[in-house]
Length: 180
Image 1 (cartoon, rainbow, N blue to C red):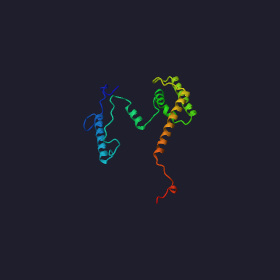
Image 2 (tube, rainbow, N blue to C red):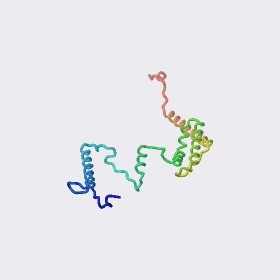
Image 3 (tube, helix red, strand yellow):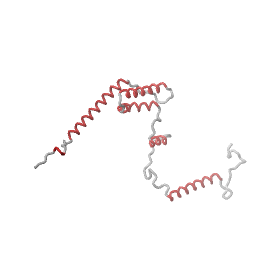
Image 4 (cartoon, rainbow, N blue to C red):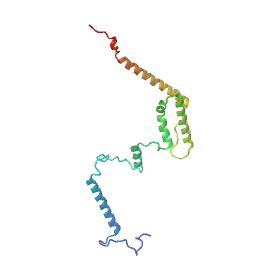
């Protein structure tokens, strides 16, 4: 039962003013907070804060997880999405990751590891979005890696030839003929 439902108990009152004590405490608390904020401003504790004078980024619609999303973005945190989303992102970036591998065996191992994680995510029934990321054929990916690598090497060689053609040939100083 609450104090209001009991007729024999009245809320505590301030002896000086006769007002309800809880209401008075709330008014005093807001005054105290306002006073402390003013003192902090006078001391300069709010000067030179990051983001001072910049508009707040407010969402278009109500999102109860706005602070979490901003924290993840600000701190550049990755790896907190459901496996289906993580695998889609990794699938989109897999060609770039494969291009960083030095050998065909490393490419094959990377593709096999990716395929293993896709199959494992399909088998888990933990909820979340469905895993629609396709597995990749290691032999096909090795062939594609070879083609991309050959194209990169050809481009580098052509660039090196252009740079070499632009440089004037320099003769050694002892082979120069003196005029006169």
